[in-house]
Length: 117
Length: 238
Image (cartoon, rainbow over all chains, first blue to last red):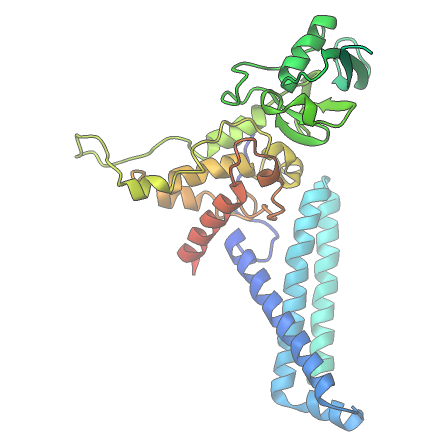
């Protein structure tokens, strides 16, 4: 039997969009890591003031939320792929997916609260 | 000093009508020193010893694709593998991930269904053309390294994505064939072919680990063909 899955619990509607999200989110995460390394190396001593100043700026808040969205989106596509490969029972797979999505949504709301407020 | 040397084999045996479960059978062959043969010939000699040994074969020259086997852990064609190049005992198993019918013979139905699903024939809706459809040598070159596939299933049977989702993922062989018709300038169904591949499984379950490239006995590169289809899907989607 040949099955063509036209709608699924993947992030996007098609494999093309998931593939693209995976690449773009990876670039954002890489940029964040490079920026953070640069920030550490650029400052001989980092105290609370420098740290607070960095995270209080609007562009850094945007960057942080972008990172958060990238990590969660990237992780969801990866986990969805692993679950659909290895968990054969649809009920168990669906339950795991719902639990993970709820966890990710909680992380998103909580993360935005930490980064933005 | 003897003039022969012994080649040791460990062969996967399973007859569902007799055996509770599969087992490995130790077998051996005496060969004149300095002589060599293909693994397929060795299997024929082993079959002469034990007539119940079952395997597929046809052309014995790497064209028909019947004798794809797992040889010392790597998929390949028995008729193109020299016995002298293999570490002993030579472990011969059926293609992994496919249901075993008996001994080294596997059920390839699912593999062929995925092949059928990519419509492996030229579609041309140009009804007014009454002459043959010509191609420039440059357009024809695009099919080199693609059309040579003999559907031996060595690639798809070495692909974990195909093991886990054989109904949803087309597999390297089917995708190589899909590209053969997508790349063909005489084919007019490119859009329809691409639309059939954009879902999260059919093509995108490929994780690019290149097992298919490593085992292809014809030296073809399904991963590159998949990459080319993916580029076309991206150009179409953005």
